[in-house]
Length: 146
Image (cartoon, rainbow, N blue to C red; front, side, top):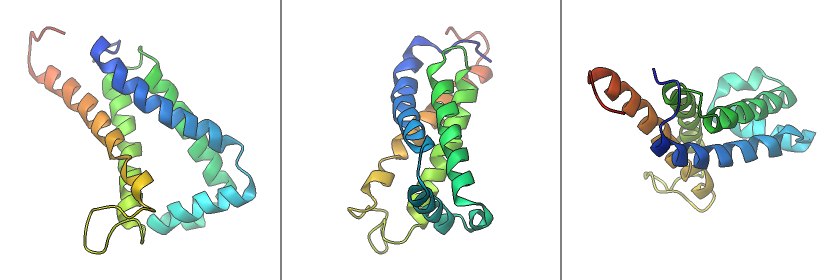
């Protein structure tokens, strides 16, 4: 596993980190109303979250976003680790998009105006998968120059 991110991996890592870190920092001081709305949307897509307190869920989500953003920004965090974390987070967002009524046009993957903001998060999934795939490929090719 590489100890440092390669230079060509930094632009996608920084791009993803900027969005995720901003979102997490914005969510840290969410009031009860925003926490309830955030939790409600997540619990609608992932019913197991219904049992969780909305304020606790929102605090954990915010802290997770800040930690993920920081990991993506830190070049000493291996790209396989940062990419896997980003892939998991982004997969949750894509799942939210796919499971939430009104986000997609009926019978289609095309977003409605309400779903466009979440549908755009598919680029985060692409970045995460790209980082993971590159690192796994390089493990399979002995002697590959980095």
